[in-house]
Image (tube, rainbow, N blue to C red):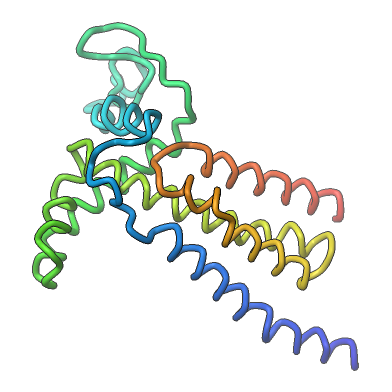
Length: 209
């Protein structure tokens, strides 16, 4: 009975602390997300946002979807030039970034009505098509994925060493300078980290159960 009460008491403070850590991590990863004002200071990000993301769209038909040389979802093929392209990253984060850009663009009129700064609403209005707008939408996507990494680091460490160690691991990663820096770019490294940690956590749980 005492062990059950201790476990319940522990849960009451673990979850709020974890949420605070994740919130702090999210704020640090989205703070001043448009820091370079469209300069494109990261070469991989500039390539992803300007040369690949701007060409991604939903196909007009099932036939186009099934044909890699017709589908606008295929970043490996240049439809305009009809030649192969060397996109060397995972497709899923690219699709998420493009979808975030489309959503951000649709929210631009609402942001304008709410009185957001003109520079912000103008950037949102071109987030679905222009390079600099897609870049910021992609950065926000990567920041969210890296915040998910904080959660799964907690789950992974807790499964092995307990909730206290899980919170410590989550906090270390939430405030890690390199993780914060990489999350400020529409690059695929943080996204890869997210799914790697999820896979390791799944493997641990499989062994345990």
